[in-house]
Image 1 (cartoon, rainbow, N blue to C red):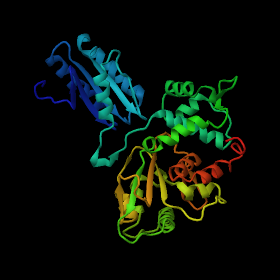
Image 2 (cartoon, rainbow, N blue to C red):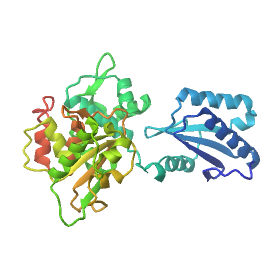
Image 3 (tube, one colour):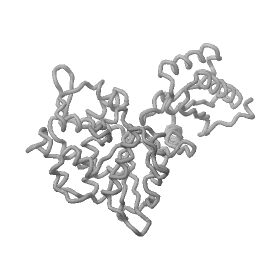
Image 4 (cartoon, rainbow, N blue to C red):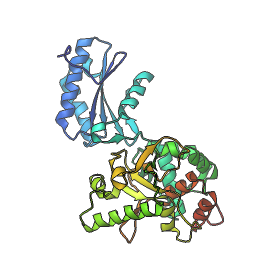
Length: 363
């Protein structure tokens, strides 16, 4: 068994087996057994790690399986086995004393691409999602929140939220009942986020290669028309965005940028939009939906190349999208504000920010 078994990765004396999005306890049990055989065959210093990525099984079930394995296997083997879970951008369950090289390999495996299920977008730092949620609540004057609510909305652990709040320091106002909120608009932290926005949101850019550029307004209208067709249950045309959006679910894609900002603040002083911005909720996307939207749009890596369509990602648990009366999903105001900054529309970004009562005269 041990000579035939090939783990997904080997780092020094650590064997790593990877299971993605599994919903079967039997899969976990079988993988642990294979690792146990391999660890037994390869010597007393060998360790085995089962890396479970985005499991469909609860954390409690995974813990129960690990405890069960320790009951039925030899103690000398079980102390060298462990389950590490990757979810919401975090590795959980890392054994004490794990070498840095193994930690890095686990992170690499967790962020690897999965061509059969669409591109795996590398998760940004949880800090930025937590920070954006705090700004969102402040802009909309939602009032203080609990750290638990913040963790649930971001889709991360309580310790991760605690670390983020500590990093924000005096920017955070703490209430006597332990609820928290932003004390003011965090200018310095916001500037840092704007500076790394492309990386934090895994921004992808698409330019028109047809030689006959279309207006961004027509691209936006085409997309929103197809949203409405999907919602009404109408049959889409062959080139329709619905063809792929239906697979991702409509709730996963929202309109941002200038069009999103105008949704929240119709008086925004801008005659036309230089591009269409979309925000996708989640980690994966099959870029085929862009071709269905407009076959002339091709991805470009050149930041100086004028883009007609720009796509960003949010990885938190709750998208915070706003569904308009017309049925179109709109990216939240924070994403729209970041889009305006990325377009170098600084005066419009200030105007949009100050359109919110909480920020007026304070930001």
